[in-house]
Amino acid sequence: MKTKPLIVIPVYNHGTTLRDVAIRAMKYCDVLIVDDGSTDCGSDNICDLELTLVRHNENLGKGQAIITAAKKALELGNTHIITIDADGQHFPEEIPLFIEAIQQYPEAIFVGSRNFKVQNVPGASRFGRSFSNFWLRVQTGKKVSDVQSGFRAYPLEIFSIIKTSESRYAFEVEILVKSAWAGYEIRDLPIEVHYPSPDKRVSHFNAIKDNARISLLNARLTMRSFVPLPHRQYDRDEQGKISPIHPLRSLRILLSKDETPINLAISGAIGMLLGTLPLIAMHSIAIILCCCFFRLSKITGLAVSQLCIPPLVPALCIEVGHYIRYNKFLTEISLQTLGYEALNRLYEWVLGSLVLGPIFAIIIGITIYIMAFAIKRFFDMKPQ
Image 1: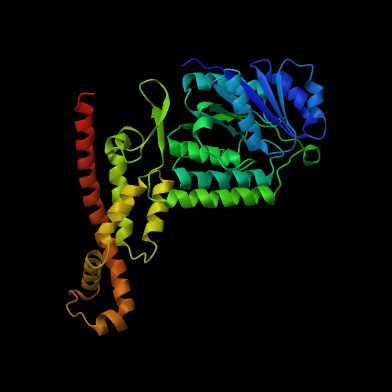
Image 2: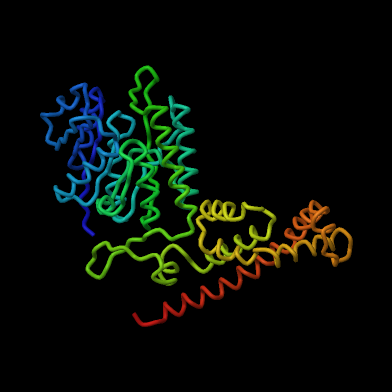
């Protein structure tokens, strides 16, 4: 795939640093500046430069500036955009790293991972990065080291496929999560960063409003990730166009893309293990959180956990737990043993689940692995 990137600089009242960033970026590629309703007349200082300038009549947000840039880049015949902040935080001299990366992996999103081992890094930036990294991993199962970095490279096709609702800073979180759900690869790219002293720093991040937007977005994305339904996937059809793949088309798609027999086996084992434990009214949440964090199959984990629905598995656990305590099985089922002694039965359920949970998990894991391996091998050997 022949790539043609365009450097995008969203700007809002960064007139003191914009010209320097633009001139340094122009050494490597064509540059597009999106002035998001600035009031400091800073973009007037770059009118003599050979670049493309688009203006918003009012401040619409960084996310909307990137969307505007993507539409303009398509008109100009580009395949990718490389976004870089206008405040001088990033080094345009590292743009060749992104150009080389997208030539090697043209369908991936690259996110610059900032080196925080420098002076003047705000504590809020350190916390914000860790906070966003954690929730992206919960929501997608993918590990990205700097979700909040604005130095990125996007394939333009993403903007015609992924539907987003955010228009400000939260957009950069939303586009990553939904792109990961759609099947796009997200790769880290180590970069350096410069933070001026606090008295010279210019930031338009509103600690209250923007953090509230990001928190609400994370809540929505997390709730969607908890729903045990596959996300819509995208792939190339025979004509090379991007087309949606229906999530229920076949197990073959799962096995050929993100899922593997071992992944499905571990997912089922986790579902069985947690389903056996007495996590009353919390089984599904625990399984989803665990599967999301470790990038396992939520559907498999939840499906297997249904085997643990009372009474069979809890009864077996209670019997084993009772035997551990008294060296005999519980044979009397009455109001006394199940009602007045309920706390004793709960304790025995815990003891029994610690014994039977791992055993059941190993059995289920091996069974699923054998089945998935057989299915994968059948489809691999089947003539296309």
